[in-house]
Length: 557
Image 1 (cartoon, one colour):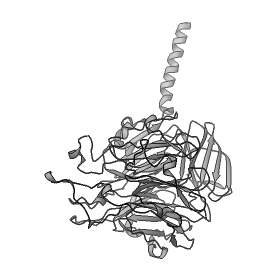
Image 2: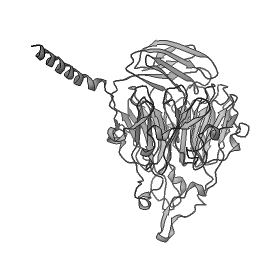
Image 3: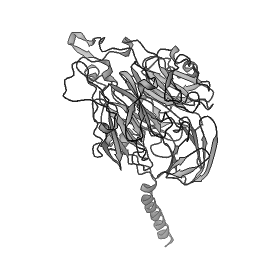
Image 4: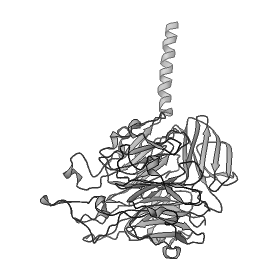
């Protein structure tokens, strides 16, 4: 009888475990719902058999709550016809309004249907009037759009003093000098003209390819200072930004040395990357070589596309992740906390799995809400005929998801997740945010010459979370540059608000923290841009909160 009882007890425990396991396990999956939800954007690079180099770039996508209804709308940039293009279609940028999870194309009424060759976009409230504005980089003149607050945008580039005619790639809004007004940093790429398009490839078999960026000269980046009256001044020379020539593609801005100002990292194509350290007045000193993030661990420059900052090991210092193209590994640089970074790519499980893929947009993001930052990468080769040149590579490629094991390394879970993550595409830009407001992060992807993806995170997380949006009231309303700490029983996490960057894109401005099995937020600490600290205690998880200076807090969702 005793033995029978023991056997029954063991069986009961096994059954209980099996019943509970699906509830408490974290299964990650993504489903592409772009077309079912009305997101019918198809990118076209305007390409021809002439292999114009601009065709390789792709175009950006941005998450923007343009109408202030507390859900995320989506803006896509589009290519433009190049000489020899013969399709009977008008190519223009497109805005899709989020109506309860379904998307409606409102381009015509919004005033955002420009037909220039669109490259990158950045979202922020630069004039502190309470609505989201847009900066657009083009293959040609850039555009600054002011949100009129009535569902429409006005092109104010000329009035505002924006005059970048270089080939701009990624741009960001940030407050360089902490005066409460958001400045603009524009990463410029190469000196290239359609009229000067060299023939590259294998002439003996008439196989034309896109030229290497090494064939073209670099350019200088730009920084525009916000004068607070709707105008900007080019301060590139004064701030030391224009001293260096690069071939910039990606950018990440954050406080890497914990001195309460925003520093800048620029990924350059086949040149040393730049790390600009802010002296707290908006004057910058380039420090990449000394810091160990200018080259890879072998002292070599790489292709440098997407880039992001995040504290992957939760040591309170921001680490750096950079994507590169096929034949190179993506790079993770660990912030050692003393101004130096260490290339830990090979020791954390991120090296070999990226070698045959070409990474572009990326983000350090907690996809499974366990409190540890994972990595999502969008891939796609530059050469459209690469398989004819090298059978090991493909033009369209899968996405990649690396899950942080919380022990200092990552596990490639791409194949295990499967589904639409594995669907090959020529991925370029990606924007990350909670489209359906269910607490986990979804992914918008703009594919070169292809249908956009809306990857809905369907992990049905067993883990808890908290979402935070800040409102700086009068100055820097978006609170870009604010530091937020979240304390729970499991420890401390922190992040900085800086939604734009990586590669041509702009993300959800809300911060998302997974807290695993913790059931309470012990404390939220907010270090506001320009000074002032608020502490908020005993907050319930699984909600989005709006927080203002002074600690005023309200529930959004």
